[in-house]
Image (cartoon, rainbow, N blue to C red; front, side):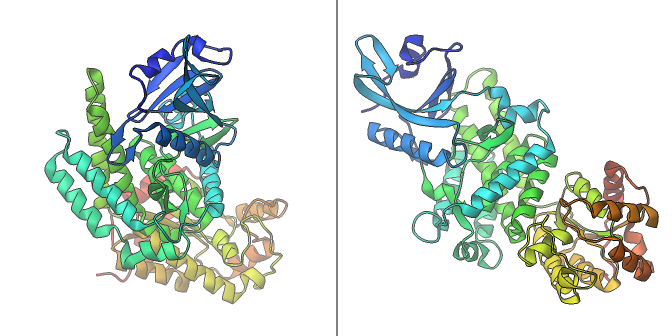
Length: 523
């Protein structure tokens, strides 16, 4: 049974609600839903529509999708999603719940202020990088325990290929999309869908395809109880929800960037990588950023069909912006491989963390990766002495090999900062060679605030437990005794930092202003 004409407007009547209202009823209409906000609750009804990617025409299907939406979203926001309620016809009119003929169903949720959605927080400048970092860590923790999609329809790469083709089909019918632009994007997407060396299929076999969110943009994240929480996951197509874990990361990364906050996008990506260590996923990031840019462009195109007045100009501009972002990621800009250099306590990690969103760049940290290789959490103490345990020669060799692998993957998606001491030229040489192979500029940020500053810092660090580094005064003394000056051929690539607390923006500007030279040894 199809939903009645005029259904949502009939539910604007306060008498339709089984609870006392704390404010006026408000209707929000999207291309697939009606949301009746009736504080303290909100009721979400599926519109009886059919598109290339969903079919909500029957009452039975709308009920099933409501139940799926409740179950799936409770994984992310258990206090936000309450239950599924029927919409019934009574002698007095339509209402939610109670006795009567059931004509539709709704997901009942706790109401929240639109100003607390992440998109509004971004627009008003009311979101902090620390909140984005926590959201990234929360997503990583969710993905670690999410259902693995190793076989069957869910997680099948063919579903994503069909979805990409559907994007192009919808956009191809929009007069607002240049045909030449669309053709170039479609050709690039087809050529790059599988990733280098069939990586997409390899990651599926390795369990990196999980039942995730599927629609993780800033409009589907809300600040609740002081924490950013995803909601409104994609319930109507398990094939588009069970994707490589990088997919959800790419969607929010893309959306933050499209809203003019590439710095926050980079924080989100950087913190997710630090939590997961999944730097190999960066090889698939460009394709997914392009895909989700086109998903949002498709939504813009669909909304344009019903838009009037000023709304047409707004949607047209947004569609063009999403297309431009997609185009930019098919031809990445020049890349930099940045090595942090200096003894323990020199401020390398502090500066690297602040340079990452400014350049922007992915950050790979030796202290974190060393412990990851040993199965330890970043803040977990190993009790290793000088030259022993985690800091033995073998462990250090493995750590630098890991950093090199991570840097190589990261360069496929843009700039990378490698945060390690790099005191020995033999440690820097493989990264110089990588920069040459990748056609990336090479930069060394030499942190040298003075020995006394470094001693004070490592001594203070011994009393804390949150820093991944375990380097104390003995390690620093050894480093100071054996450190060597940078080689003369490296000096053109060096940014010297002697301030105890340098201005990250100034350092980033200096890095950006360097002539993009090949790494030492290049032609």
